Length: 256
Image (cartoon, rainbow, N blue to C red; front, side, top):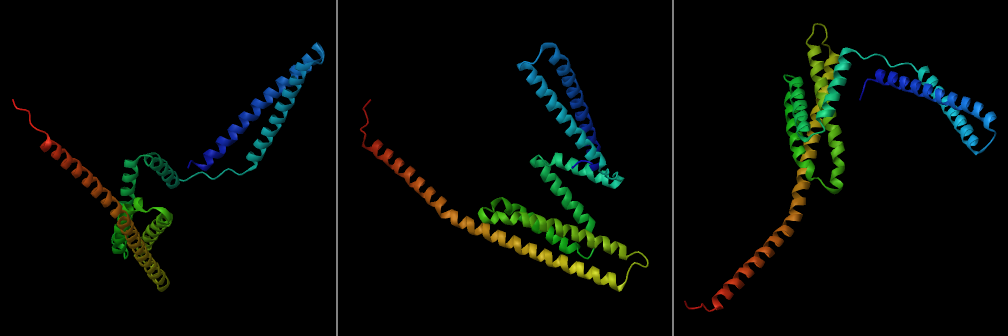
């Protein structure tokens, strides 16, 4: 989620430092081997010195190769002010979204932001319907179990696509109000986008209705089992109470 240009140079600096460290280590081991081998003769420790020198040299060579390959790539372009602001917002949302209260607050913020962007447009009414459907689906989503959970990803993608389409339509409408921007081609394209948005909202509402039907039927399957257990527990307690009452009635009272 970071700046690609910053990541590029951070990786470049990391490779350069690693290549220098392994070059120093390889040089030191090679020099130590060259000095100690003639001085002490060939022995078992010299095998380890030579192996270490060879391994460090190979690693230094690979690190310099990685550095050259990475430096040969073109650095990503520098982000503009708008892109930097969007990146900072995504970072903040990533941190806040780790907490349940933060996720709820972000969801509400995105909802109000979307509705404000489409306010006064041709899709404002449909966008309000979509918002109500999204909130209803959010309450149903935790109860979608088993194979029904497969629709959660599809619903999330449809939600984002429809909101983006609604904001796109509102932007086109604002552009159509400028002098000389309106025309038959633009009007036809705008009408087609509005039709797609309305059809998408209707499809999403149908999905919410199907999810509600699933949750209702799933609840009906589980209710008799829970009710039966409650009845059994009640009968057990009632039997215990009646037995205690019989015992109390049959026990003679001691005269005082």
